Length: 232
Ligand code: E4P
Image 1 (spheres, rainbow, N blue to C red):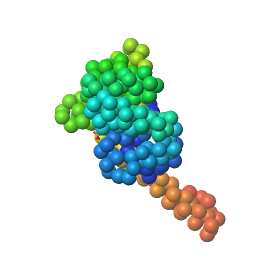
Image 2: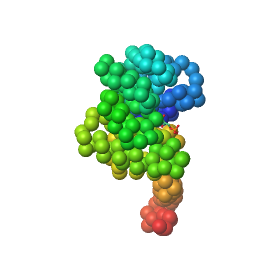
Image 3: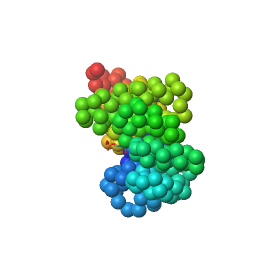
Image 4: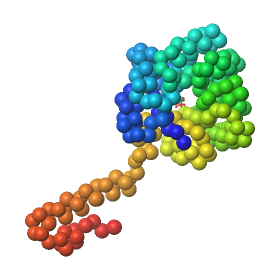
C-alpha cells in the first residue's frame, strides 16, 4: 500500500521524504489555510520533494471554474493530480479532465456508489473519508472494503485512497482491506514509528553497551562486564 502525507507543511513533507517512505502528498484548502503563502509555490515545492502524485484541490463549484483551476494546477508540475469533490458537476469535471489526460482524485467520497461513479467518470484516485464517517457513528472502513472489492472485481482503472485517517489502526485495517493508498497526517505517520517497547529496547541496549565498555576499559574483565547487562 502506498503512503501519502496529508499536509501542506513543507517541513513535514521533507521529513517523511527523508525516511524513504513517502509515495505522494494530498492537500486540501483547509490544510493549505494552516500554512498560508502562495498555494502554487507550495505545490511546486512539494512536487520537487516527491516525484509521487501531489493532489491539489479545486474550490470552484461550477464546471468552468473547476476546469480552469484544475488546468492551472496541472501546468505546475507533471505529478499534480487535480482533486475534485464528489458532485454532479465534479463528475463532469473528472470526465473532462480524463479526456484531456489530467489525472484526478475524487474527494469527499462517503459511499461505495459515489466511488463507483467517480471511477467510471475517470478518476485515478477515489478518496473515501473514513474518519469523518466514524465520527458520525458509521463504519468508514466498510466503505473502503466495499470500494476495494468493486474496483478489483470489475478491474476498474482507479485506486482507492483511504483519507481522513485518524490513527494508526486505520492504516493497518486499510492495508488489510487491500486499499491501494492511504493518506496520513504527519502525527499518524510518527505514531506508526513509535512503540514503547522499541524505545525501552533502544535505551537498554545503549545503557548495557556503555556499562560494559566502561568496565572493560577499566578492568579488562569481560565476564564482569557481561554480568552488568539488564535482566530481561
Ligand atoms: C484527503 O485527501 C483529505 O485531505 C483529508 O484526509 C481529510 O481529513 P480530515 O477528515 O481529517 O479533514
